[in-house]
Image 1: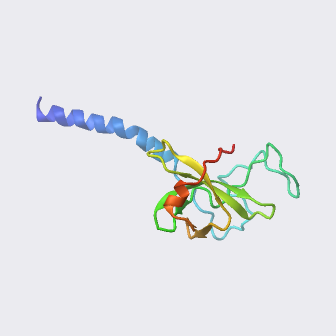
Image 2: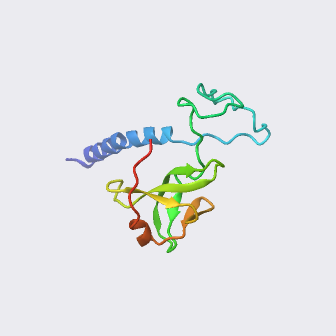
Image 3: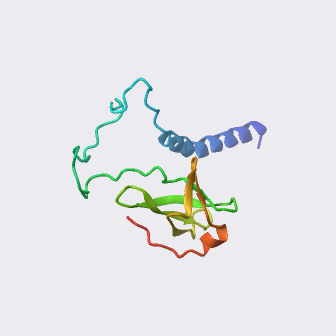
Length: 150
């Protein structure tokens, strides 16, 4: 096979293999931050109003009302010995809105065999964009598995 044909074949394979990655990266881009001159209550023009939003002053939780995203979700969790032990999957909050426990996905390899464990209040602190545990990685690995909440 000539060098030109080989180069064309390799180029075609690279283009075909890269197409799904390009489409996936275009879908996962973060939205732009709001402009500093806009008031915080003003809606951005690229955001549509939420159809299931609860009216102002509504009390109680409706099954159709969306849950507010907790800022701790998807943060990396590090043990007291400095190793990354997982990421925050969900947060259990008390009536006052404070975090009572966090559920982290830990262990496994490439997403297989990971377990969901609960870290109780007082055993974790927020440290910038990470969660710092007051437990070692070995102690986290010995925690009992909890059921996933839907």
